[in-house]
Image (cartoon, rainbow, N blue to C red; front, side, top):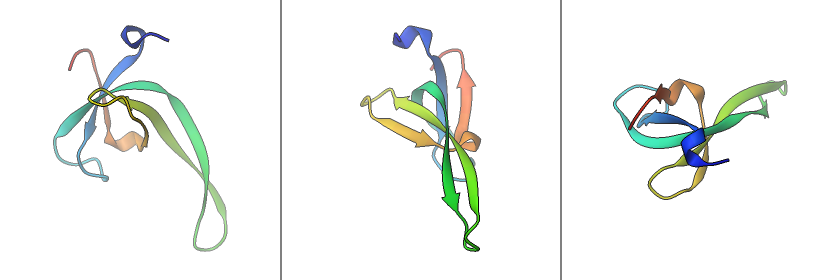
Length: 72
């Protein structure tokens, strides 16, 4: 898929989603991964697969850190 077809996002600099949204990226899709809690229960966690604009690295980012935008 071409970058111009992907949705643009800005990523907050803090893991709790607070602060300025300073990093630009391209949203590829949602992914769900199993997380094992302290009690041993398997809990699904959802992440966005984001391609970072600056260096092209692909990261799993928590949804609360994203803001979908029209332009950077």
